[in-house]
Image (cartoon, rainbow, N blue to C red):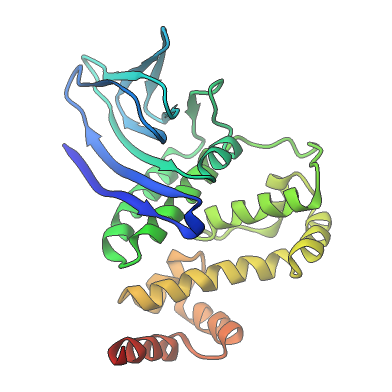
Length: 277
């Protein structure tokens, strides 16, 4: 079964294009290539096994693992004869594509990766395809899904790692929050990922972004809440769960405090504006 619901999606500022995403349950020994691409392509294996071949090298890949294909290289990959793989993939290009894959720990030296939570990765990839179909702004849903995917496959960072600048720390924290805003992450968890203490992260973000980590995470969640209120008919409970909050009441209180109106009033205003357009 091959399912490719989205191609050539666009993200803000011409910096990131989601070229393709989908999934396939392969037949025994089903192969693809040799082929070259002009973008980064990341596969994640849900079940089964297979192998990636490029430049005279081969890498076995099995369930819970994934592999990176780089722009311009010729590759071939093939499902196992007895236990063919079922995989999902996402491809991206643009000025930010190399930076994001590198931040996730992937490059020519690390072609195959193993995730800590395979079920969470699969849910993100599934959600990305579903949301891209449901939302009018499917390119934003796809880009958001890519960030969440890369955040989940990023290696655990050394908490004593020296970070070169406050701006780099802030960027790393923002990237982590954008990738995981849909789950109840803590500020301590974010600080651990960046490699700072919680108080250090607070000072860095106040200096670089003008707000605390908690406030920044709320801003990110409210921005995504606005998108879902505008582009879907999801209930407040459903939207709350999509942005990492526990209940619709919690969403309502946070949204009213941040935007000055209730989520329902915001949705109605957007519908009225569209109707008059």
